[in-house]
Length: 248
Image 1 (cartoon, rainbow, N blue to C red):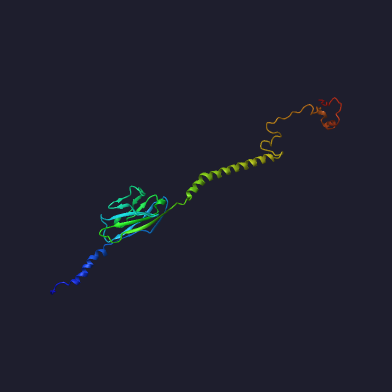
Image 2: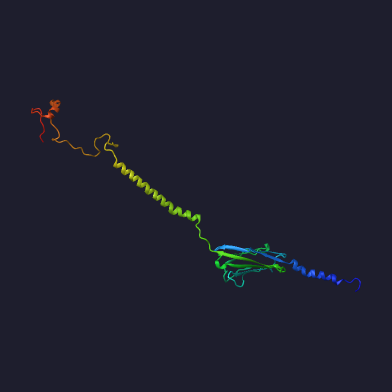
């Protein structure tokens, strides 16, 4: 070996380090919640974020796939490459909305009107060349349950205002009329015969009543001079010419 020539044994480690350096630096990590629970009919947010050593470019792609709960192969239903491509047919047609922002490391989607058939595993996959190593996928198990029926406070309030309240008012009015009618009847039934009402205090007879005139059978015709002897005459009328008893 000539003096001054490089030692090949010293260059070999440097070459290996240079070859492995991209794999150690260029990596990507995708994260999503392990489980998501929702009720039937809800809009479900399927969160997914990523971190990459390279800035996202137009070459970055995102894929969402679904594997049913009862088993089977995963099927890709959503794709992103510079713009979102939602599904046009199949189980999720018209029900997926893009909620991502790749520049901020966000690649989430929303599932509208969740059904019991949506139970299964959703997988989020991100590719951002040259970051091709690391953990480019993440899985989320979605569980959709029937929505429990419940009565809202507003429903109860409307029921009370439009049904119970008018019924209560009508009941109170009817009870009040019954008591008033009862008191009026009792007042008429227990009125004293010597009770004097307004308009009767100056007259012995009720207004409009006819006064019966005395007949000849009810009176005696007396001479004015014999008026003092009335009571004695009443016992036995005299036969004098100055006193005449009616014989009617």
